[in-house]
View 1 (tube, rainbow, N blue to C red):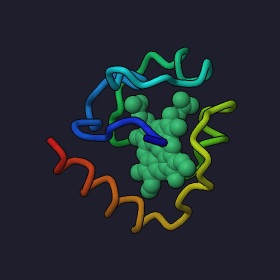
View 2 (view 1 turned 60 degrees about the vertical axis):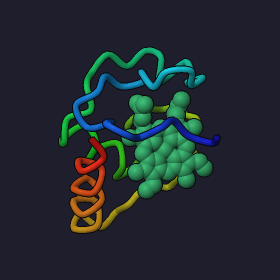
View 3 (view 1 turned 45 degrees about the horizontal axis):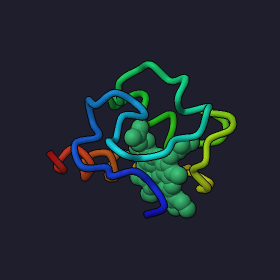
View 4 (view 1 turned 135 degrees about the horizontal axis):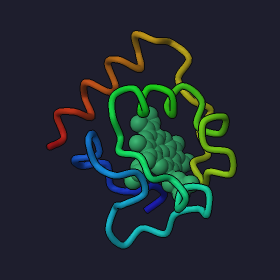
Length: 76
Ligand code: HEM
């Protein structure tokens, strides 16, 4: 398993998937995954959370990010 389970991630506290080993950078996050926080993170993970283990360049296209976040909201 490369990344944390994203079931129910929208509205969940950041870095709280049970049993997943997060980066120190992620351990410091205290916010919940609101739409706005997810949008900023998925646009550019490493800029939003310097030091993150998430090796992903991000999604620059706003419409694609919105579509993806809508999809994530359905995982509940
Ligand atoms: C569209 C694709 C992706 C989405 C929507 C996504 C979404 C997310 C989200 C929302 C989190 C935070 C979860 C939490 O707080 O529990 C996260 C964390 C993480 N993701 Fe992704 N991710 C994607 C692609 C990837 C890829 C390609 C990788 C690895 C190659 C990856 C690896 C990780 C890792 C390791 C973390 C934990 C970060 C850390 O501890 O610093 N993700 N991802």
